Length: 127
Image (tube, rainbow, N blue to C red; front, side, top):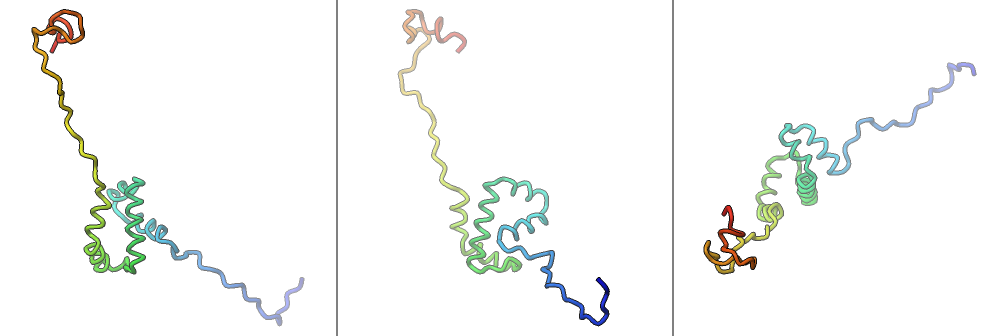
C-alpha cells in the first residue's frame, strides 16, 4: 500500500484511561488500606476484622457519607455508636465455675472406688 498524503488521518477510537476509578466500595477500601501503617494492615488481614470493616463502610456509603470528610465520618460514627458497639461485642456465654456437689472425702474415710482401703492410701496418694 502506498502512502497517501491527501487522505485524512483516521482517528483512533477513544481509549479508556488505563487508571480507572475503583467502582465498588471494596476496591476503594483496598486502595486505602495500602496507605495505612503496618500495624493496621496486620489487623485487617484477619477476615473477621476485614468483613466488619467492609460492612461498616457499606453502611456509611448507603447513608451518603463522604469518605474524604473526616467530620462526616465522625458524625456518622457518633450517631451509630450503640449499634456498632453491639455488633462488635456479641454476647459471650457466661462461664460458670465448676462446683463439686458431693460430700467431701476425709483422708481417713474409706475410698469411694470400693477397694476398702483408706482414701489416703488409695486414690488420695499425693494429694
